[in-house]
Length: 381
Image (tube, rainbow, N blue to C red; front, side):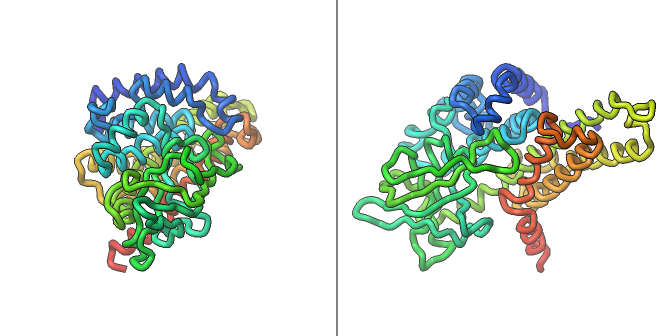
């Protein structure tokens, strides 16, 4: 079915993203996977090709797109090539960038945004903690007033881009007695004394994304590092989570759709018992089911993208898109592995790596169970 959410300008941008990935990522994909991180020269080239500053105003060297559909096009093309690539780049330009554009002072914008756009300032966001998981309101990292500054102490984990980041948006508790209403966001340069990184975490999948633990031991920052309003960090995070979850949905679906396209081609070429395996009735019916799941889900996600571009996407609809696409992605790719037979279990085959990569999408950006809780509350339960 023809998609109608994108226009000619979006498709032209899609072509430029594809060309960039063919030139700067695909030839080095194996090396990047082995190194478990995107090299800095990749980020710098992405900056030169206007991939990192879509949300950023032109006065800070950004693309100033003013249209979320360009973000969605970028995420789709990244996810088609590699799910980890989509997660790393989208954290930088689709998740962190809105915080820096919408909540920072003029001085902070001048200090951080040009580097974000060029790839010279790589970003991450420090929400999740070792004992907290999805319970952001229970975070334990503290920011204690000390003279004219703050001392930050605590730990964060599962932080995408955490091993390479130059700037991390850290959520810390500034007024413990206020609970969720006592959290503040800080922009923390990773060069500051007391900021330490753990090892690159050994994940089941998404090898290309550097993921790390972060440790803050009395890291001194000033009021010039506070992002947004004091004690309103939780509210700020909640306001930006719908875009993050929509980005996850876009990535989930594009990733699964591409793997399915490649699996259909495999089923045409692979023979057994003297015929293409796709012609066996079970496989034919299964593929028909998978294609339908992808296309029907695409219609909903496209509606969410259009709604967000118009400023109308609700947090509940974003939650629906996030959990549903995560389930569809895992279901579809699991069947794709089965259709590949023994080859589907070999890491040299893309479908096997995609299967591993997909599993975390049911957990991050709020687990699927949390998404259903949000939807249930909206229904009055």
